[in-house]
Each structure stands twice: as C-alpha cells, then as structure tokens.
Length: 568
Image (cartoon, one colour):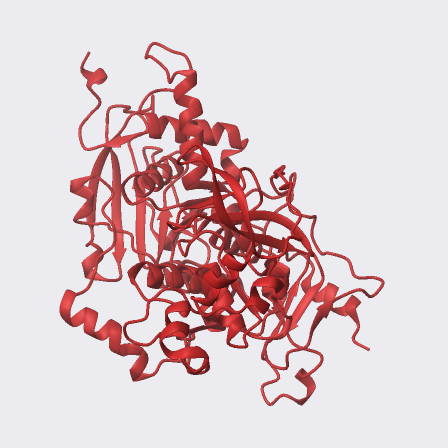
C-alpha cells in the first residue's frame, strides 16, 4: 500500500497541481527519475500520465499541504429547467438532416423550448441544449432556426457534455454542440464542447471548475473549427491545458468542423480524422516536421521583435517578448516597482496583455490597485492640489483592471516560494490567460534551499524554473531583485546596480534574457529616471544603452518629456 504520509512530506509547502514519481509504475520504470504522477494537493486527485493510474486519495491521513486558496464566491442562477419532454418529430428531422440520430438527441435530453431572446426582446421557438453536471442542469443554450444563440442569464458556464468525461481516457474537445453530437454519433462519447465558442475568455471559469476531471484525462484531442479563429483558440487552449498532453485534428479539405465531416464523409471520416490526430510539439522533443511551419514563417516574415511600450526612445533599446524573462535591478529607493508597474500598464493598455503580479512589498492590495488606477487614468487617486479621479472613474477603472490584472497574494503573512508563485501563476494562465508575470521582489520569496546546495546553485536552479515557465506558457516574466552587495559611493549615493551586486550574481546575468537597471538622482525630483539596459539576448529586442524617462509622482506615469507642472 502506498504511504500517503510520505507523499505529504514530499509535497509539503507546495500547492496546486504537483508532479512526482508514480509509486504504481515507478519501481519498474527504466527512468527512475521520471515524475509522471500529477497530484492536486488541495483535493487529493492524482493521475499517472505513464501507466494511467488515477483516483482520489481517500486514505486517512491525507492532508492538503497548504491552506485552501480563497476563491471568489459567485452566486450563479440555477435554471428553472427540467428536461423530460419527448423531442418533436420536427426536431428529430432537423437533427437527422445533420447526421444526428434520434438516439443521440434523446440521450443528450435536447428539446424544443420557447425562450425570450435578448436580441429581439421577444419569446421565440428554439432548440434547447442543456448543460449538465452530475445529472443536474446548470445552464441551457438556446438556438433559433436562423442560428442565433442565448444562454441562461447568470447561469454557470461549464463544458457541454461534462458528465461524459471518463477518467484515464483521451478526451476530444470541440467547438459546438453539433460537433460534440457528431463525435458521439461516430462512437466517441468521451467528448465535450467549449461552452460558448472557441475563444478562451479572460475568466475561463469552466476550465477551473472542471480541473479535477481534466487532471484525470489521459490526453486531449483538440478538434476545433478549421479556420483562423479555430487555430487561435486551439493554441490558447493547449497553452492552458499543457501542450504535452494535446493532439490536434486536421479536418478534410473543404470541411470546417466535425458536423461538416459527418455530412460529407460519414462516420468513417470522423474516425479517420480523430485516429490520425497529431501530437502537439512536446518541450524537449523536436523533429524537422515540427519546425516546418516556424521555419517557413521565419523565411517569409522574419524574426518578430518584442512589443513596444509607448515610449519611442525606449523602443530602440528594450522590447519585452513572450517566452522571455527580464531582470530588473536598482538600489533601494530607485523606483524599480514604479517602473515595472508602468511597463505592465503599457503592455495591458497597448497590447492587451493580462498580467499577474506578486508584489508583497506593495501590500495592502488596495494601495497597489490605487497606484495602477492612477497609471490607467492619468490623475491622482488621493485628494490634493491636482484634480483627482472621480468616483465613477474609479469604478470604471476597477472594471478595466479586473480584465487585465490579477494579484498573487499568500495567505496572511505566509512566505511563498518560487514553486508556489509559479503554481499560482499557472492557475492564472489557465483561468485568465495571462501574458505577463511580475515577481517583485526576489528577496521577499521563501528561499529554503537544501543543506547540500550552495546559494549560487540554488539561484541558478530557480532562475531556470522561471525561464522554463515563461517559455512553456508563452508569457514574459519581470523579476525584480534588490542588490545585496551594492556599496555606496564616497558622497553617500548609490552607483548604477548590476547583476553582480546580487547574491548568486553570475546566474542572474546568465539566465536573464534582458536586464534593466533603474537609477535616479534621489536629491533632484526634476531629474529623469535612467533606465540602463545592461543585457539584450536577441538583437531584434533592443540594445545596450541608457534611456531617461521622467516620473510624474502624482500619477506614477513615465514620459519622455518633463511634466508641465514642473515649469509652473
């Protein structure tokens, strides 16, 4: 019998979806180091991606290793809907014309219902597709004859076909109800549809609420529509589920989706497409075939640089790119956090990047949020000689911030490790689709390294984890570091910091893709903030040099010109 207490000890201090060695198949495996067992430390759900062993830990003594994460409580409306009516002959004929049998229609409890459609503001005859979890209807999508859709107002969003997920089996994910029914008609019952189109929204609660079921799936077969939107949606869904567990379906030429294939090629066409699905590239394994598309893109389009941030003078020197990490340094009081807040805000405003921020030095969170509101609105949050943001603007700004910013905060005064931040950031990737992660600062993380590991080795290991995380999930990480070895000059001022002024210095320089060092004259409020670009790994993203930007202390904004009130 596997000792769950030992597993608890191994995972202590870690939270979320953790990988470890599988006790079922590990002793017979050639690779004794392979961590193939995924364990959700909060729920006890586990699944081995090698041997398929999956269950929930029910043994006495199983204790989650961290406090349960506080989740926003949402009071969903439960539809007043009880399926049970026999499908009308007209409905059966409608589905038959689309290759779907009466048996499949009845099994999925599809009916015709009259429903008030918001776009026409009147009741209309519709086809009702109930969304069911554990046998209970939690939402209903209504489809009119002319292909207009409406969901139950205020109801919870879940996968269509959620109860059909079978632990330990591959799961097909499609883009619409007809496609899910077409797969079922072809013999693939273990299939779900995303709830409202292939676009994965900012707040994909339907992914989070199905986390336990998804964790127990052997692998995913992504079978969205054969168009640009479908391909973008597939890429985003794979990013959140983990590309190493995903296969991609290629529908026959001329067919947009699964129902098109069923009508044109029959069940055999569906089966052929599903059975020949190709695995998405796995990190660490690359074949020349995998490289064909990016190589041709590189040939035809060229290398794509990182994003510009709205300051022309900085664009020549610094352009952050997805999949990379920026190290940000500076002596105490130089304004590192303010600069990164401004950069994150520009990335959100200009490029619609969603950013998660771990900033324990900017607590309480309402103060940090008020600073971001100043950056967003361009006026002070607090009262003073300059007109402040209005109450209505603050309300509007908070709604905007909710779409683009998420805060990572440990429970009470608990410290959080690099692994802990990355696990919570992974949850933000899955739920919110973040493109940026701010860790501010490194020095506030818990750094309990093994007794036999030097500080330099530990720093190198952690920075490698952060870089791999950025590459795997396609986001940019800003890591702020307080130098610990920086000596004051004779006049009492600090020099421009470099990575060699931080503990574990060599790795801080080597692992970072880009390095920014922030410096300002603390005795002169009218002096600019100097952004020293000390490393750029890829020349298309910038070059070494110094860029002065002026800091407006009223709003936290950076600009290329001095604020006008300085001249008043």
